[in-house]
Length: 153
Image (cartoon, rainbow, N blue to C red; front, side, top):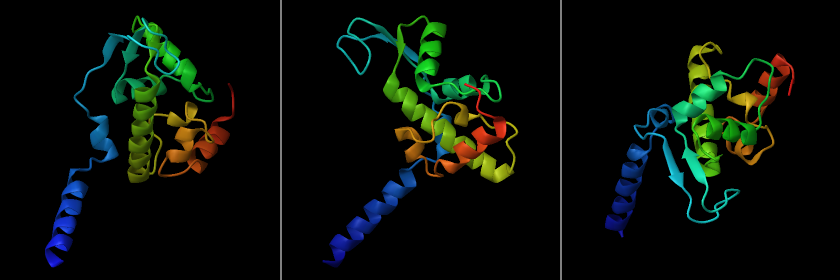
């Protein structure tokens, strides 16, 4: 019985040690991709050309959104697809990468107590969206930043 407990404890410690921080996830070495979709996927019909971004690309996009302007996730995906000669941008990875950007930049904000150099993820993430509800810091920060900037859509 004791050996089993130790094994579980050791494997739990290993799992915890392998977990990357949000900042580490931002530094992924994976490159963006463009691929043809062979089957219908989410809102993307078979035969379409799909762009798969990176967290850095998503972060750079958010930094270009003017203060006081909110962009929908759909608009961001469309803009990225056009900029990368594709029909669509992957909805799954875009959501994952946008969360990585939000979590990493919020951590940076907490460390510096300043918005200087922070990617304004609140201009894309809707507070009551599924992604907004998943954020570790909750939706209040997004609402607060949107109120400070003024809602211009």
